[in-house]
Image 1 (spheres, rainbow over the protein chains, first blue to last red):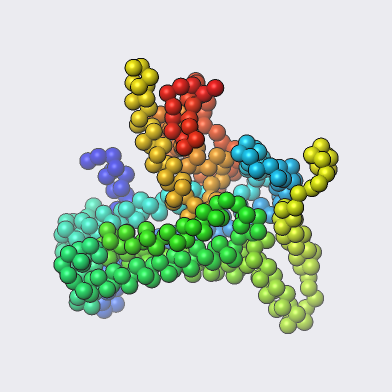
Image 2: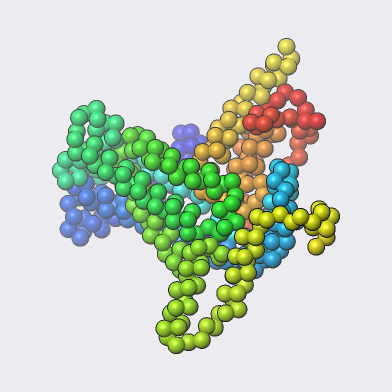
Length: 320
Length: 100
């Protein structure tokens, strides 16, 4: 067909294979092949597989961002050079130098864009797979016509068809569908909000909190629920379950990261250091990583001292 | 007359610019600082579309996103320099004249 369908084909094939695989497992374990619960569990399985496949990416990113702490003195030198210069060109030059320093050191604290974008076609693929199945059409691969019919006729607890959207629920005046959709939206908002809040308040350094991006993030925190409500209106309940489980996965992953591998210099990192120190004390061990803690404290101090401006003339500041 | 024709010719890329600007204002901040390069992937694509047009701009942007993976070293990565840079206004829309 068109190029877009061609690009989506492999993604849809994999999604179908995973969905059908989990459907088979749940059925083999005694689930009713036509019940909505079986399909929801299959969707949960899909999330687990896709997100687990991405764990190496996440770990790699965290390790690399920790490693970038080593060139912190260099980054601070650049920050010092541009201290107090808020105009667009100085900002740009500073960012260029910072990025170049990271590249030279072979470390980069940023996550990279590709993994984020990959999740979009996956979600789109799922929407297409579920829509096709809902129309009782066979999928591109393992999702046969038979399974498609099973899916389209499946209901959760016998009253909530998985293929319906909130809009359809209102149209047909189906109270269980509306209630389920609203409940899902509320849980989604809560998880998304909590995850974002955790990242923003606990896992960012004071320097990150001063950037204009942070303020924008704060505002968006309150816009996300609106987005979610719109998507709940448009997408079938089945895809909402995918989203919901994915959100919960992110939340748990984030909590683990914050407690085990926090961003150096952030509130969470300080909390972790304090925890570790207490543990060592309890075990009667001497504080071995005093040196490490000291460097962390020093960095913390320097990022906070960005604010005051030197009264010395510019030429002297540059020279020091 | 030719000026308005030129403006019409720039319409496709300015539509793309509008979409990208909206993305950068609304969706992009959700992720925080993510990109391993300077300019970031969306800024790079925006510039590429502004200076090279829709087709080449999207092509360059797509290739850049493919370069922005967890194993990439990152660093400064600017768009290929066009033969002549077109002027843009503050919102990012391309104007029908050369950059001064």
